[in-house]
Length: 395
Image (tube, rainbow, N blue to C red; front, side):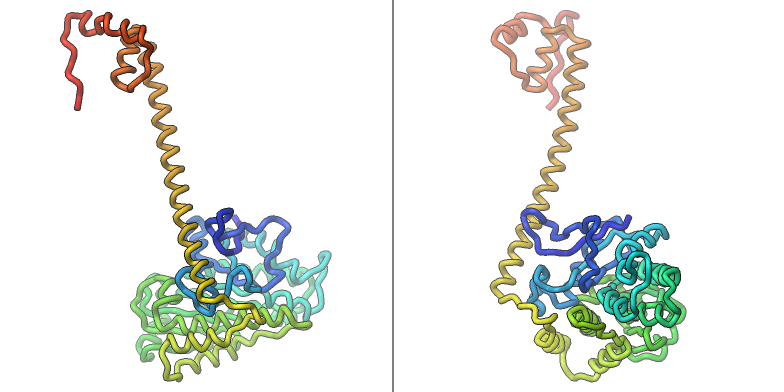
């Protein structure tokens, strides 16, 4: 399954705040942050990482004003997907969304145009979600070979795609994309033997360059395998946020330029490292970042506008919960009605007409006519006809 969704504001028509991308649409024709989790079947994973991606980009999400951008006004598509790791699904996804960026009518295009087009692609992954991105890179390169791009051209084009993996042990330093990853070395769910050297030699954090295009940030956290700590809680969020904002700013500027503005992930990594020497709190650093980020002059929300959108989010969540509860109640009601109809049929089949009415009246509150009620009262029950006393009603 390769279903793709764009995160939007919540409305009555769209209380989830996710619009499904229809066939024929290619959201990667503009800057995107594709957010991939390992679990493609659970809504919380599929849509939750897209919400976190928007928050890291300093776009307003529930209770986080951040830089104050309205997600519907921001020139970036924040995408969620039910993409699996099945090879056929990866191929379908790449052929559908990425290959049209680097080809026309089945032929390669000039390298500058291809670089500019794929600079729209930015990918945020959590845990084993990185495997999907890695598979995309391998398959995209093979398709570019079929289009007769040279190895040098392929390398130049594909490194304009940036991947930001969080909490994964899959970084090998051989990925095709530009990669900047983040990991808590105490996280046992993504432990790697290579982490031991960092645990022994590092103080609280360490910046590692595997190649000019592949970098990692390691830190000693609480060991909890939780995406939210990278986005909201731990000090690492200032680094993750800085990277997400910078790669998206570059993506937007490049998209609006006549020619590609190449991403230099090595430069982004170096400037990110400089944050560690700044004697300021995480909140102060984020405040300064929020003042700087502009996304090509996108207008920012006022505090009042953000508050109103937050209230709308709350109401839409309540509406979704009420609809879910209503659906459960309707299902339960349908099951009970089916049971009652079966009971009614069985009573009618095995009891006399009068006693069938008596059971329906006394057991189910069935509506009977005056004549039927008189008939019931004048007719002995089955037990009375057999000379037995009626049993007392169960309480």
